[in-house]
Structures are given as structure tokens and as C-alpha cells.
Length: 215
Ligand SMILES: C[S@@+](CC[C@H](N)C(=O)[O-])C[C@H]1O[C@@H](n2cnc3c(N)ncnc32)[C@H](O)[C@@H]1O
Image 1 (cartoon, helix red, strand yellow):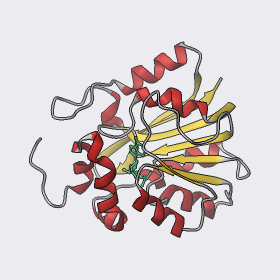
Image 2 (cartoon, helix red, strand yellow):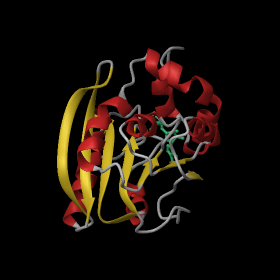
Image 3 (cartoon, protein in one colour):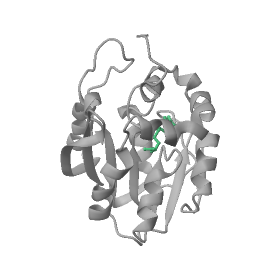
Image 4 (cartoon, protein in one colour):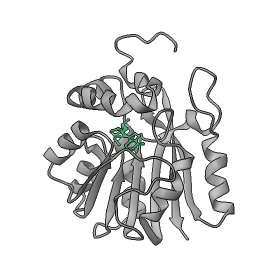
């Protein structure tokens, strides 16, 4: 593991062992917003425009890896009031609950090919920001995630562009995210509606945004 500075706490999240990740977020929860904001994380704000474009305020939406609920909060300000929150960390979800913008809460650590507790073929929209990456969600989680979404439902993903291709040996991340996403499209699981790169994901961090429709 490369040396991390004390202030580099956002990057630290990408170097946890999978089985320690929930504890890491439970312990970090109360300082998460302060630390990520100080380091210039802007994932929820920069993903908002795609949610407003592709989802209706009345849609049933699930926020995967909702964390402290920053994206749910922004959507709520735009009249979206049918949003559920999902996260592996109980402490992160507690803070999301405190925002008063989510309806149902699912606290569970998602694992590929393990059935999750959220409803099947139910949601019009799924939003996932900041949750794809090393020690977080990877393409193997996608089939299970897709089961929650109705046919025709939209999946909105905001992530670091860095994870689209092999980022280097220092990360435990043997995925080329974009290629794997393309494979799901070739297999007829989803259809790409929009893809965009923006520099505003974080200070010095370029974001990649994918919007899919479940088919
Ligand atoms: C970087 S935070 C992003 C939180 C929020 N979406 C935001 O943008 O502020 C990643 C979140 O994903 C959750 N997470 C990562 N992998 C997960 C998994 N496999 N199952 C459930 N939650 C997971 C973590 O607990 C954490 O709250």
C-alpha cells in the first residue's frame, strides 16, 4: 500500500480490505462530509444534472452506496420524494436518515451473486455515485443491482474516470470498468443513453458519468 498523508482520507477508502470496508465507513461516517468536502469531492453535485435529466420527480429511486445521503438531499430539493437508500455502513445510513429525504433504508454489504434484500424489478431509477472503485462496487455487482430496476428504468452512475481502465498495480482493481459495462450492453442487459466526462467530480479528479436503461 502506498503511503497516505493524513489529509488523503478519501483515497484511503480505496485501500481497505473488502471485509474491513464497512468498519472503515462506520468509523469515518461522522467526519465523511467534512473530510470529502475539504478534499474537494463533488460527486453528488456533479451527478445531479444527469438525475434531473433522466429521472422524473415521481420516480421510485434507489440510491446505492448512498453514504450520508448527499445526492438524495440534492434531489429532494428538486422535488424528488420517493427515494430509498442502500449502503453497507450502518453509521453512514444513520446520517442519511437524519437528512429526512429517504423513505426506506437497506443496510447490507452487496456481494456479487448474493441476493440482496431490496425489491426486484421495482425501481424506475437507480443512482450510484462514488461507489464504483477498488474495495467498493465493481462490474460483478451489476447483475444483482440490475435486478432491482424495472425494464425501462434508468441507472445513473457517477465515478472517477480513473477506474475506467486499469489504474495501476497499487490498486486492487483488475477491472476495465467501461469495457465491462460495454459487455453488459452487448449481452442485452442495458442500453447506454448517455456518457459524459466532466472535470468537476473533485479537485483535480475527472468524473465519468454513464446513464443506462434496463432492457
Ligand atoms: C465514497 S462513499 C459514497 C457515498 C455517497 N454516494 C456520496 O457520493 O457521498 C461509498 C459508499 O458506498 C458504500 N459501499 C461501498 N461498497 C459497498 C458494498 N459492496 N455494499 C454496500 N455498500 C457499499 C460505502 O459504505 C460508502 O458509504
